[in-house]
Image (tube, rainbow, N blue to C red; front, side, top):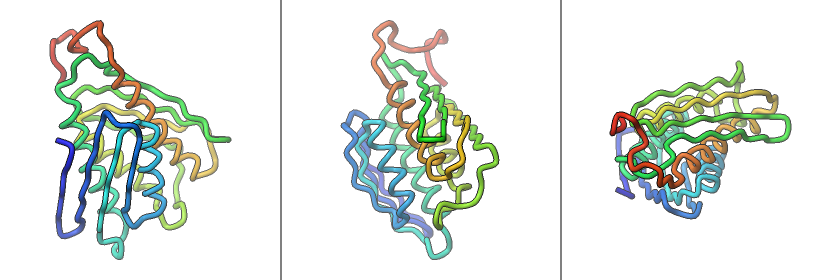
Length: 192
């Protein structure tokens, strides 16, 4: 499944996602900073992403950000699992000037997410930083992966959050690299 339309009383999302892409994107969520973060994700993961979301941003950005995570996670799950001949594990350390963010991913077909931003709070413009947790939690839960994102050091909020999206993208790209040593990357014979 490469396309998903999801409509609720809070959001109307139309999305096309191609895992085996080249990082092309066309994104409109009506939230400028969030658009920028999703473009960063697409570019550095190599995943093609067309996403259009009309949400109740007059209430706040929560529903739009969380529901986009749900849609992206669902599409990623449908395209990747069952996992065959892939690395499964991926990690990345992304430096953005004074900031360093690490991300580690396990394409486990089990959901777990941990975000540690070392008490980074507040907002970037009108984008509340707590929405980063909401987005990645929704994405990882619906994708069914384990993911840890940790801020090592940093002070510029924009750099920190962009580092989260870039490190996730690169870690995912690495976890999806071909591995011909084994068909199913688990001693159990299956993931989940």
